Length: 572
Image 1 (cartoon, rainbow, N blue to C red):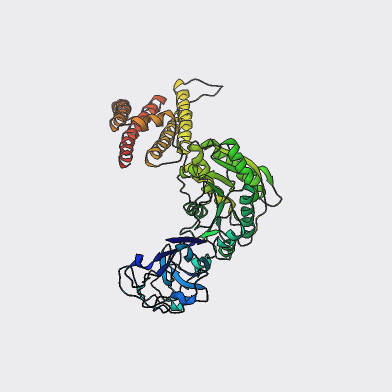
Image 2 (image 1 turned 90 degrees about the vertical axis):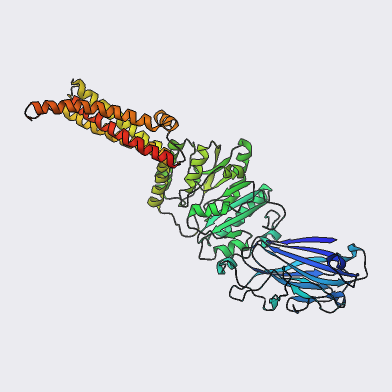
């Protein structure tokens, strides 16, 4: 059996030739069935024209076409047979014609098959059954006999005469605009791998876009050049949410354009990551701020250091005039980077650089969840927390093409908020420890009733210290609750939190709380008795009284917090 496979972009055609008697009973053993199995990986219906050149010894009189399909689907010239078929998203269809020859050598039946055109189906036209197949029942050579049969054996017509089909599963004009995929650029570049190719790319470059028609062409061209400089096969995935010509330009240059079903910078990246095929994943903005031709520098560092991720550092490199506002360059980015390094021990110089390469297996270890601009921070936070090795190389940061969509204060606050929410040890536990120390020192100074550095600390200091200790206890409890109820990137690591989360039992907390409460309540009872015996006269506020009240409150809180903590632990 002769078999050929032809690939063009996301469309594949497999041509097979089998004897007629191998496909079913026939009275003409010298007839052959030529089957064209057309499959598509597009996410919208496409019309495919396949040209099958006949062997040199054969011509049009040796061809029998399926009946009922007509000349609008099939065209027979002197030495070629052309089939026009519709393929639904992610599906395949089979077209078959009959070839008559006295040749018994299958090699004599080898022709040349080509995919002439691939076009999107008009989404406004009527729907067809593109899965129909023809099982020939030949009458005589040169005439079209047979019938169209669906997979269940029932007769059907394809309706291919008008050449249209309805877009399925809600696909519309947006999908059609993305039709011109990597097939065109693949014909011009040896390093862009079409989606339908047998081999996978080694490098996957992901670009999120929203109305970047001013810069998308330069970015894709430079990315393609970078692949050539590296000598590695790759793909470019544009995760697009534009309402301008960005997706059309990207597709014309060979990028695989996808449209996220959610909003946000981070979501666009995560949507693109689900479709990458390479062993190395590159991310970069499509606004010309990053020069993709610097990509070999990142790969060289990756290979030399064995890192899991390499970032391009703008702050350690060069920022061209006007490329970054002074507020971002000298305040925002350095300050946010210091915060991130302090909270997560990342050790990077430019935490919010968007030009990175990461190994695919390292990316799979990250549980990225962010939808917005804080995605850049989350990737480093998770990488540092999971022990991935991060390296940096200096890069040049350029002026962007097109209108900027970054809001300095809003997006800056989102980064800070995200870092704090995912580091409750710094948000709650750290301040709680500080408050506790300050409060205890204030209470001790008041209890000693001695001047310190010439200052006398009395009952007011005791009251303030008591309030500070109670506040610190409440804030620290929030850190403990977050460590149990939530799943932050970096959980609190102080010994007390670790001890409680590892060994806590409800009975432990309630016993401790009742003990403290009882001690405070006993002393308070003595005070009440004294007050009654004195004829309800005013009792002086002495530091030890405030200490007892503080212990009583902390004990009550401990009992209730223990029950709440037990509920949280049980819900997990």
